Length: 124
Image: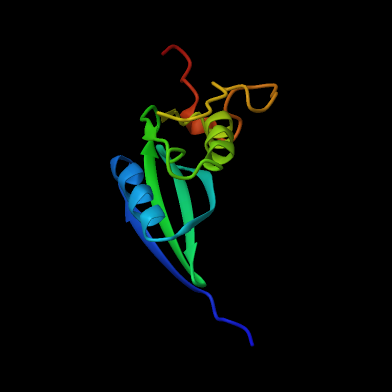
């Protein structure tokens, strides 16, 4: 017998993520993944949590230059995802339990997936 996986998507603010992660942990959810993608003027981070074949996705729009609170106090393994998003998209996570400070990956340029629209304009 196969269980059908249900998914929900919810848009939340960057300030709400730490508190929501704490609540989800206390409710028995596990962290599935988090990933980033560059959108116009911001990085969108998708956090996915699972409990009993139900996936709850939290979409967070992080304006370029804004920080996000780390979820590592509740989900230790998130340090991998957070450091990856930091290095690839230049998103800073505050209060991380293991911050590689931009050195998680060895890369030829800073934040290669942040996109050209985030690059400083000539003369500015």
